[in-house]
Image (cartoon, rainbow, N blue to C red; front, side, top):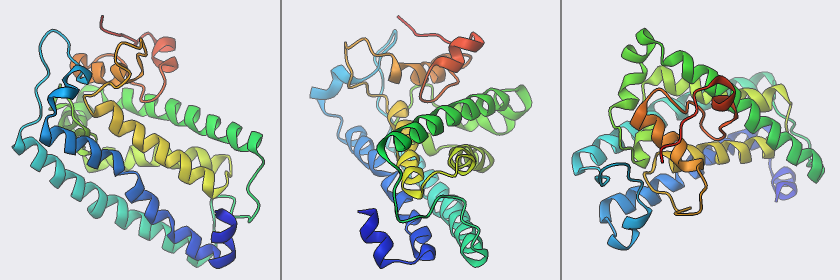
Length: 244
């Protein structure tokens, strides 16, 4: 597919295709919000519960979440991305590998793994810092207003926090000079992950896979599970907790 893109677009135009990735990243948000609105009884068993039955978000919560999502995507992420791409294209300072040839499979896999691990380390570090009292009360607290999360909560965050965690995603592929296709793929993986772990649903039901429960428990218990995709940083730093 990239060969077709490369043969029909200039490097500047390929950079602009990154805007499409922003909207692909939102696909799970639409899916889970649809489930939250319709409240299918057949899916109740996949809802994450602790000592009480999990409530669905109210219409007010959903409307607020949609408004925050519009502000986050169209008011912050999209304008900043447009500014960044404009600057990159003007000075031809491409931060990614823009060659026609995609790296071999092993190189792609190694880059993806490295990007996800580096992103996790950066995310964990920034997340721990933003939980310090002053930063928590003035920036991060808005994201913790809901102890029982739903997908839209992933976008209920302070603009400064949004910029910080967006930067966390962008830094690793720039450091590795990864191919732009790899950057696009990792951006989708990380953003889809963020929506899934806030959704309140665990479709690995009774599979003994703690992946989704870890961040959900972070919102319930606050002082644990600062990681977003893996648990190795929490386990290394003694902040891991999985409710029984």
